[in-house]
Image (tube, rainbow, N blue to C red):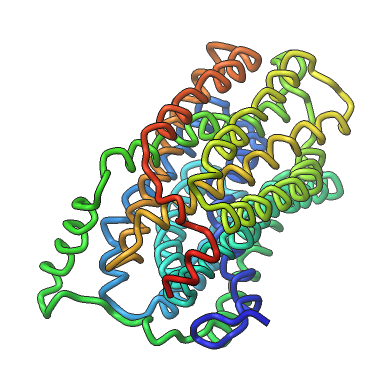
Length: 429
């Protein structure tokens, strides 16, 4: 049985930790989109306002050093999970309100800040609890459970909301049940992590002397002095340029009417497609991506993964052009795109780990993920408007053209050929 550096089996905490990291994110960024579509908000308003919810993940590097310098990552994880659970309960209470859009958005904003802080502590804990070769070897499984959370949010929970709404005759009751279950789930997860997470010796506050402001500034100064800083930022912002636009519009496309260019799927059908076909494909892609990097290294896998994350976007061009009504065809198409995303995203995660390695890796990784969130926020802000101008077919064709940005940044960055290989990492430790 594989153990972490703290002597506890990785399987006792990696699955729950990364499932708990992914779930609030998908609720805020994706499930909120379907919620608002069901409750009658326009596509333009949905994509615009929900894209702003990326902002806490963009600016989280501003308080990441405070997490690094105060307390243990383990403690931050448990506290933020309790806060997230309370906010899920608050969302459930706002749904039947007359001014639900404003109040639910306020709750989602607070959820985004709590989830961003949770991200900082989880990612830092992962790097503290595992050796370097283990970090590379388990990145596929880490991504797997994170993506399982994503697909639970946009798959199983969406199906549950639609099914409950069908039985009760009330859309609001379906969504209230979903958010009540989420609140209970995070209470259980917080208790589990209080007792189940390992206790690595390196999990402690890290400061440069007694002056916290000097420590804060030093953390950022070290980050901005890293080699190839400008190229690294370009890579973080543009590697997923097409995917960042697709992810906001795809659920709206699946639910929109045939007359509007969509596929007219019910909320239940969307949940089933993402939760079954999408889950299997994303799981396979994530594991395959991590295994490939562990065997051949990040440099050798970068271009195949860049192609994998972009080429499957063509299936959405087909869906928009032909508007098939057979759910099997739609499910296979979504599965192809999800597999490519799972496989290609492994390269992105490993690059962030490579760039943030060194002193203050927790805070530096948080800064990297801030740029990652910005890469999703900016394209998402205009994606709904762009789709309204181009129609669904034109929009998905544009997504394919946007892949050029990915290939340009991949050609510019430099990567150690040995980085990510299991044998090379073990030799260094």
